[in-house]
Image 1 (tube, rainbow, N blue to C red):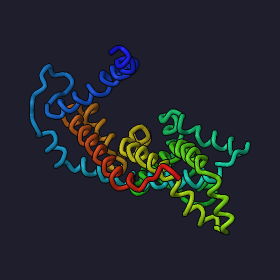
Image 2 (image 1 turned 30 degrees about the vertical axis):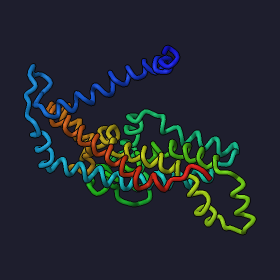
Image 3 (image 1 turned 60 degrees about the vertical axis):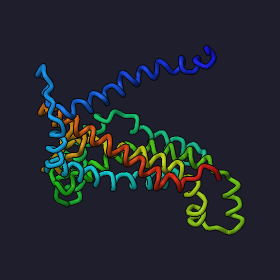
Image 4 (image 1 turned 180 degrees about the vertical axis):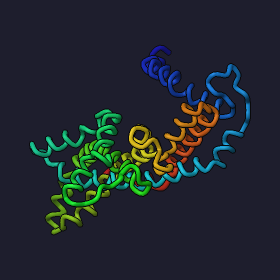
Length: 289
């Protein structure tokens, strides 16, 4: 009996940590989503589905869903395509490629707040580096973060710049696992580089692509820090994403019920999206060459 229980005793501290700081808060959020509470009141009034009904009838909620969806649809394919293209060139073990890997990976471990503050200065209308360069070339200054048509693309650029290094390193690991015999056979058969990439490389890095797809989609629907520091959801709600709205409703307006309901909706949506990706894309992933 002791031998059978030993593995569970080893993981017991981690399970206790997850229970206290993950599972219990999730259950509390679900409970609060059915109540009306403002952080200060000693009572949490039961309101049933009223918080969900208010959210689903809110224009701000659907705007946040639209903005977050557009962000995910653009940023995720952009990240994966750029990461795979760059990783294909940096997979060779040379001094230059190693230095480039470190330089590209550095933003992914840098403070997101620091990156957002720096890029707020870079894209500033009055004293930003980009507008200074445009003015030097004789062009008019661009209101990057004040224009509703441009602000979201600035956020996409900054988020891609920060996360790209992580995707590149993961892709390099996946490319290094591809058997070199397959490339040798393809070159003997006279296969061109693009044909080899499409017929050999892409299918064999599908497990890596699938992993990064799941991670990057979840990350795209949880973007908050960059938005909160650079635009705070503006201008005119052009960058107001779901988590930003959740923070505003829950911790600025102190409507904990609606904030919790929004968190539950996002949680259920991400779970459903992960299951859908597993059934549609996961079946096409092969883990052996």
